[in-house]
Image (tube, rainbow, N blue to C red):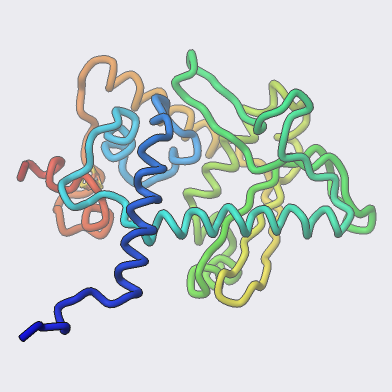
Length: 251
Ligand code: SF4
């Protein structure tokens, strides 16, 4: 007798087909061969180094299809945020006049970043100063509420570090961008609530992140593995790190 109970359900089959297609699409995209400035604020310098070196992740630790879908949803919501801000009379530029995203490339192309947008003007009643960096993130309800409660610098230090280093490195191409607070935008994916926060430039943080980038590149050039962030593989950072086995020597 046939056992229909073992046949994957329709939602599993279609979900698997979509995830396979998303992974295949991702695999056709060029891998980045630079240190992404948006990542400089992560907790562990060794993890940053693995990322910079494009070290293969541990078996079974590849990005799941669900997370690839999360990335895509984030991009679509960011497009909506751009539309909403423009409707609210902000002059928001997401592409250079010559085409392509705004961004920077330093240290011979080994550190690069691409910014979500640049504000060159906005509603006068807000009293904001321009040019200003615009950074947009999407979050689930819990994460969003934590950001609203504590502010981006405390709740999401990786994003704060990203904005600081972007403001610093963009100053050469957009004069004044580091003198004015960045506009941080967070969209709640569960409720569509929006959070805006003006984030003044933190020069000390930008310098620390720049020093960090130099440390990662220099250590990599001299084939030196940077120290671990934690003293035990059960540390929360390590549990979610795709190089956990490699780092702690079990592969
Ligand atoms: S496993 Fe932990 S210490 Fe090792 S690279 Fe990852 S986060 Fe850093």
